[in-house]
Image (cartoon, rainbow, N blue to C red; front, side, top):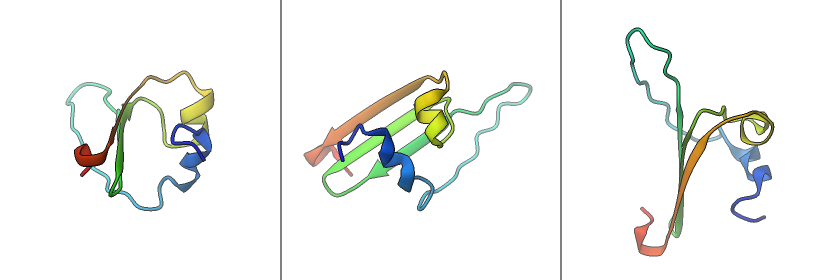
Length: 73
């Protein structure tokens, strides 16, 4: 399966750390996902939920950064 294949989110939510951000008096709920391995890492920050709809069907905005090799944690 290719790295940018939306079917890869099927494994989402099996192992992750959740964090909180507080914005008093405002609606603030971006999502940050970090997928890190020994050779590659992907970081995604956006408005979509971690569902197939959030990645494919809904009108969402994402910024995605991918690194390989020595740049990966």
